[in-house]
Image (cartoon, rainbow, N blue to C red; front, side, top):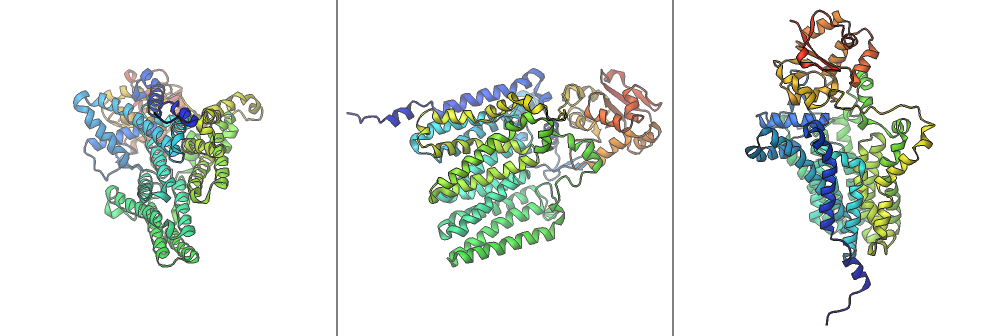
Length: 601
């Protein structure tokens, strides 16, 4: 005779299989995010950064050196990009895998769809696992289900998983979820602690977007070691070893030996290597002190000394890295280009321009932070670190999002499993029925974002009417298909709008001067100065830079600003069809709003 089934077991058994839900949800997201690419073609779904990433991968496959990140066709003789080969490598491998069967073009197209889709599946699985590992076995199915659905509704993050999204943001999000999964289980597994350190090092080697979150989480590990001493020694030491070891190994794999100490402040280089490897070694040093001396004051003194030495070495060796990452951008380009990039908008600017979006970006992570703080207070000391480290990580991401809108994507998707965990912790019976799912969906980013748009009329009266610049790529000359006809012209140097540069590089063999990258001060300034100069002054500039073609796009954001800056400048005159004698239109390449001019030699 079989034992009776308890009510909680019956309720848990009735929950849908999380694996099936994950698969269905993943397929639905991939289809929804891939629809625009089906409609316009996946190559035209590429953003400017996606297009430049594709160019970088093609150059790698064509034989450009692993350590050579120069984009030679951007502001010739070239600009050293601040991106990482870690993202280039899997994209190149996928293209190589598909190319024998499909050919180059189709292999690239399939890679553009497959890569973000695979990462979306990984993000859903990691988020669900974060929530389930903190729950009782009987509740795990419903915890996973609720987390999968809330993650799928993290609207600010989904744009980074659309078809064609091959830039590094989606990889960073997945690595961060993996980091949170491992570091929240750090106390109970040295292997997870070491893996958390490795994921942190890998994330920093790709880009610096997650540096604040990784820094505060590492500080929380140091705090755990100081507080618990030998009880946390093994896990904290494993985390430090993973962080230091992975950072040093990645430096050898990604950086030439003669550039390891170079003061690169916007990418993985000497400053970040010092902080990451030095921080890991500092943790190991304090762990050693904890092993030898069990006094909390000795651990505190050792941590203070290690931190002072590390920060002192950083400020002395790399004082320029204390400034904003955009400090090197010329002030003219800040007002002409950088201030209209939607990713760099702050919360105050968003409130002034589009207040209906505030709840969509900020309400869910802020609400989750509140729930997590309550969970910290109510949880037992034995498991409180899990809440502390996840809360400070989310708080750092939320702080970044207040400074730059791009931080909202990671903040919302990391908040998804934490929100489900907090609701389950504060309402112990919710995970045993559908109450958890209803509560989580009620506060999801999609729901709160919908509320923001519903109450938009109440905000509208107090706004200035300004809008964030979101030009349509199809009419603002940013798509690869719009630049493809230029490939018929003999290869040359093209003076074009800033956001048209990556598409031209991806679609043709031409070189361009302007591109939406903060390191490209020279090329962007050359374009602005030339196109706002008088026709005679512009002629000398074009000759000095050996420009072969000029491309004007009347619907680009650049054209409107160039005309505003210089109503009688070269761009304004060309926009009116008033070409100087040294320029001739290439009629076969031109279309409404887009004109190609050949520079007569």
